[in-house]
Every structure is written in structure tokens, then in C-alpha cells.
Length: 489
View 1 (cartoon, rainbow, N blue to C red):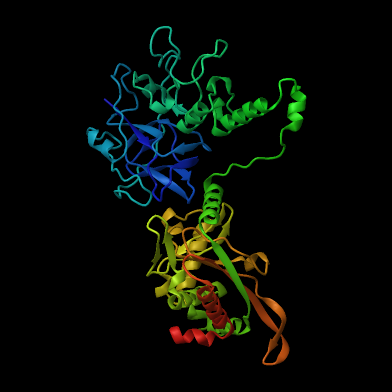
View 2: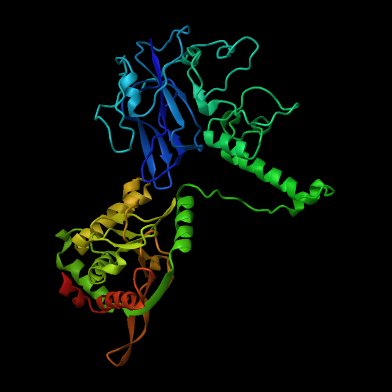
């Protein structure tokens, strides 16, 4: 006899509370192995594959692609311990479990294995080989199966489910699929199941006293999405703002027009972090123009010294990153963060250097760990590796967090200067503009030199202008005379 286990969206770490389903990697009826990836989700940090801790037959999936689910919401159910695809329809309620503790309640494994590993975080697993996926053809079941009793309305179903297993169920429906008791009763409201899977959508509807039965879903098979509820909320609010005598066409003319883009995922995370930075950090910016001619010449000499067998070429960004680590060693006040609750400045020993990288998913800041222990070549190789992972969407949350100082090269966009916003909770960010030929007084003579503008935005709570100016001046000196950097190597 099969036991149906429910796998919920796990806590992916780093304070993440929700994730959006990007792509399902399994179908209903597939046989999955323990720790086999079953869904690809996008969080505010990265795009990751989530492995299932159970082995068995997928009986239901909760959430269409594009649906945003909170942590703890059901993802799918797996029938474990069955020797074949069919399940006795007279079986009692299926057991429901989740997380690492769910594996302890499962009986011996069947063909697909019945023990859960509990390793639901990305990057962990038991190392069991992934079984070949096979499709089980669902048996036909009368449409009346699943009703809770004579004359009652059928229970709401998952987005997709195996009919033979769904019939086994006199099983209780997850709490996320129950009709909210607080929904306002209306005599003319339609009856029947509500095509909603996400608990987040139901909560949003309850908060605004919306009857989900009156909303038409735009998702697959009429599924009501979060955007449908938000649209209904805007419609109700717009109707409430219009005077009773106003005609409907007049109200529509007064409504704001234009496309709306949801602030979620990476875009939402960036918006929240930048807004928090502006609210909490009293920042100030100083800048200086520097003659980068000698730095460019030194880079060319370094890349030419070893010949073709010397390995990857050292980039300008890698040299600037190495200069930053040397400057932070002299001015450790800027490698810090502020503990507002304790009213203390925390000066950090290690330098975890973040660098801004523009990708198709938006702005990301991968972090080079222990940059203070690396030379320019090592930093350059790590920057190249992280940049490639960012462009392919393979960065993990751990690679995007924990930075202590950020280097922002906005010169790649063809601009000279900027006043960057500090990457909260860090204390400073160095901005680098484009390097371009400009008239410059060199050794008392007017000459054409390669000039770059450097800007430093810093938290005025951790230091005063003298420290910030000293840091920026040291960076500029190393750019103008790379030999200065040799003193600290």
C-alpha cells in the first residue's frame, strides 16, 4: 500500500521567505529518486533547483510555472512504498509529512525507494544515483471521485494530479487548498471549487475581503494567480475613489494608464535593499580624477610578460580590486558595518569583495571571498568565474551575500561618474568610471592621457571625511603610480 508524502517548499536560507516556480523538472506520474531535482525556482537571490527528499511516484504538483509560493507551501506529493502504479481506492487517509522528519514516518521503499533524505537544500544530498524517469499512464476515474459526500461540491484539486492516486484519497486536502472561512458570503456568488493553489493568493484575497469565486483566473486551466487578485484589488480601490455620480467611462479615463511591472524576484530584492540603504545609512560621496596611463601600461606589461602560456590575462577590474584590498588594509574603518541595535561599529577582519555585474535578470553583486589573501591574478580568475555563473543564472545565494565592500565598475556603460548607493549593510562602495583619453597636465606639459574618475560613497557613521579622503587618495595614487602598490605586496 502506498503512502502519500507531501513535500513543501523548503527554507532556502539567507532569510528568503518565498520563491517563484520557473520550471517543473518532473511531471505527474514520473518516478523520482531521493534527492532528484524536481523544480527550478527563482528567489530574490538566485535561480536554484530544489531536490525532493522522497523517492516514489509524483502524484500531484501544487503551483503552475510563474506562481509565487511562500516557504512551507506544498510543492508536490509523492506516493512511496507502492509496487505498482495503481493504488487501492479504498485506502484510508494518506499520511502527510514534510521536511526531514517526514522521512522517519515512511515505511520501507518500493520500486522507487521510500526513505527520505531530508536534504532539501540545494547543493546537498545523499549522493544516490538518479533513477531514469518513467511515465505512468493514469487510470480513468469517474468525475465524481473526490467528493466529500453525497450532494457536496468536489474538493479543489492541485494543478495536476494522478487520478488513480487522487481517488485513493479520501485523503485530507492541504490547508493551502481550503476555502477561506472569512470570504464574504454573497447570495449571488457562484459556488464550487476555487482554482487557487497559492496560500499567498488566498491570504491576499482575505486581507482585502475579496471572494475568489468572483475572480477569473488567467493562469493555466483558469488558475487564479497573484496578479489576478492584485488587479481585482485595484479595480475595487478605483471604484471606491470615484464619486457615486461619476459615469463608468469617466472613471476609466481618470485611472492611471501604463504597463505595471511587479517588484519581485531580483528586481524586488534590489529595490528593498537600496531603499533600506537610503533610509538607514547617512552616506556621503567624494570623487577624484586620476591619470590611469601608467596602470594601463603596467597591465599590458603583465599580460605580455608570460607569453601565451601565462594563463588568462589580468583585467583592469582585477587590478582595481587588488588596489581596493590594499587600501582597506590601510583604512580598515571602511571594511565595516554598523550594528544599530547595539550602537556599535563592527570592523571586519576579512575582506569579502563584491563587484556589480549586470545580467539579463538584473543587477547582481557576486562576492569574491577572502579577497585580501589573493593576488591580482587570483582575483581576476574568481571574478571571471562568478561573472559567467551570474550570466547563466547559476549563482547560489551564498555567492551573492556576505560582502564587506563593493567595487562598482559603471564605466562599462560608457559613463564618467556616479554617486553609487551603498550595498547595505556594508559601509562603502568604490565607483569607477570609463577610462578615456583626455587633456592632462603631465610633468608640467599638456598631454593626452588615459583619465578615470573614481568616486567613493561611504557611511558617515563609520568614519569622517578625512579617512574617506585618505582611502580614495591612496587608490588614486596606486592607479597613477602602480609602483606604490608594490610596497604592500
